[in-house]
View 1: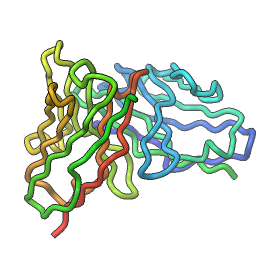
View 2 (view 1 turned 60 degrees about the vertical axis):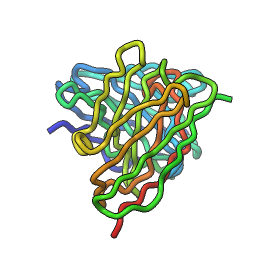
View 3 (view 1 turned 60 degrees about the horizontal axis):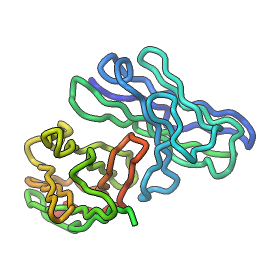
View 4 (view 1 turned 180 degrees about the horizontal axis):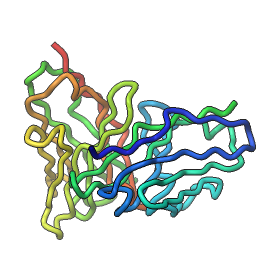
Length: 111
Length: 119
């Protein structure tokens, strides 16, 4: 089954580092790029944070970083800030489905 | 101004049809990959469909859950992307977003439009 698995929640105190995982398979994460989105309010358009596994679009702070190894990817948020409280989604193209997959999302809480 | 504005949402009964429109300003929908993504109330993002640039032959792809029921298309003269939704199900209830160049550095999202399928 082609799915991207994320933990439902993650948390940290201001200044801490938080890592979110995204586990896929050989048909998606293992062979194609991974992307990360931030959605700060439900019902508002998400924002692309990371593209091509580890690249940041212009304007995204370098506190956000992406990495990938095999069929798993990670998003790290360093120097956690209150405004980082949001839902985070990973995404990847799946060659078996010929379509994009999104993970179910991880809610990050700043304690 | 570069933007995408969706319209055509609303309430429909199961089995019904609806056509979503996404009017682009500031760029041509024919020169970009254009996508639809949806988000059910309180749920996560789900990719729905894409159409590739006109110069690449306008190939389309669909999520398994909508394949055979939804059709993505565009009208270059009106600079508008469409999503024709047929045989609608309760589980199609969601906010639908139109997106330019999803996962790319020139990515642009519309504001979203709500579709409610209910008897």
